[in-house]
Image (cartoon, rainbow, N blue to C red; front, side):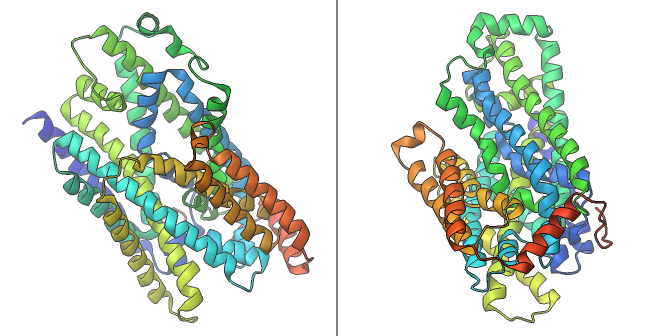
Length: 501
């Protein structure tokens, strides 16, 4: 068999495995709470690996190693900022959000939590936040489909459309039927695959370059500045890269994992597992890039046309074709895990946050689950149509969407959890301000000076506090729920029995 045949066998086995997990999840899904939030039964490890895999996408295996291969360790500040942001998110947001969403009318989406938390009878909060999620994630999913199309095009010589349909089709299949649980369990498998690949590649490559000392000598001979965390960077550039960590608290597809945990206390174990996974995978990506520099320096007969393929090139050069195929599957896993998470959150925005407002008030659980699946299909189709236009700025859109969510939702999530005086109008003004500032800043020359999440987050936070102070009215029910959520987040409180996964 040819090398490509071995690699295709590995890819097919991976895809079949994902569909099988989706079928298992389908058998476990009984009602809308199961479909949208897995019945709030996620174990810490499941929630942690799912959050990590759905977060990182192909950036971890392609974008980060490529950036460090070209620019050196100064490009690692984004990974440092993301790791710190993720730790803070797990430490402070996770337990309180899990507790508060349950206390506040068992909210199963971020928009419904805002409405229930602030007792907003106008439904404006739910509609505005639901629309923000739907719009941003439709384009986010499209970017993942483009990445899938390019993956198959460059790895196997297929057409872009074929690759996009394979990635979109399989991801849609297990998400459509498996719902949140299907997306979550496949995330776990995908997260483990990514971790193994990011450990195996640098370990084997380091042996090929002669060990740590020989590797560092080769890098210094090529360009010693590549080993510096500051060389080639500016203060604002480093701040902008590290500021990616600000976005974590506002990402619906990540923080929804906190809401799905069994109890608030599971956040402690989840944090340790999740941050451990993040540190290991980030270090693996950085090491892959640095060792790759040394490897190609020592082997001048080999060429690396695209720095973002350093991870793939090392796998295909150093491993048996079947193992290299599994490494390719890890890249595919990173892409698909993010798409599936975004599809299910988009579906929840359509059904839970928009349809329930204008549709039947007493719709059956079976009817709502069916609508949830239709929502997944609808978002996937629209995203696929957008992806057919291979816009070269699609990856830049990921950073733009991350900033948009971080600025629009980040401050209000924090304030809703930790400040009693947040008001409905303060929340609305904050979300709109964050989204508008990110849009204007991100499409101006200032985007090259400072990442738009910094001014967007700051403006959103200030507006939320100022408008809330001007419009706040005491509410005994809100205060009681706030105190109860805080108590349960840090007590030995145990939620009603759920099936744990």
